[in-house]
Length: 204
Image 1: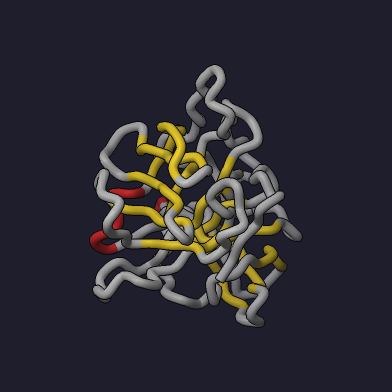
Image 2: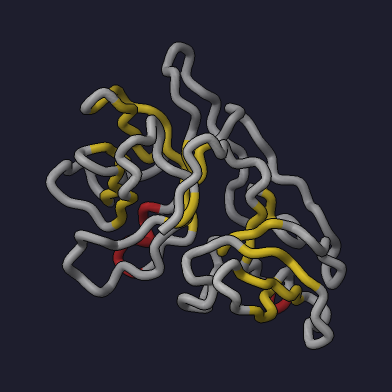
């Protein structure tokens, strides 16, 4: 992912791919509520049902496949907070996941998942505060606080006269359009998606 705006304070470098692991590292961002602890980097930890199983590098969360791809906040295959229904994907599908199957109402918003082509990637600063790049493909980021305005989809940055310094306009694929923080209030609502492994792109 590329951060839209100045460098963000959260850790950005992907962990190295373990020798012989055969799986790229995975990053989970934007999970909220009781599922917030699943955000972060994941590395492969064996196989399950013929697909890679992942463990959180600095935490207890896991990503695993059991009929569908799932994320749980602890090493327990009997439950999950988030899932993705693309059962054909060999790796956790990129894009927006959902809380389908979780019976609580306290894990929103669901996260964005990204599988990285390379074992080490440092997001580059793509714009200065108040001068974001227009025409960039984006998704909600780790500091997103705007509910379901994006409809769980991607969008594109656009010029909007109402976007003041530290904000940028986005037109989402669901037709909604609004302004989002790229430095205003010391927050960054968006990430760009051009560095995701897109062979198994997902969505909801």
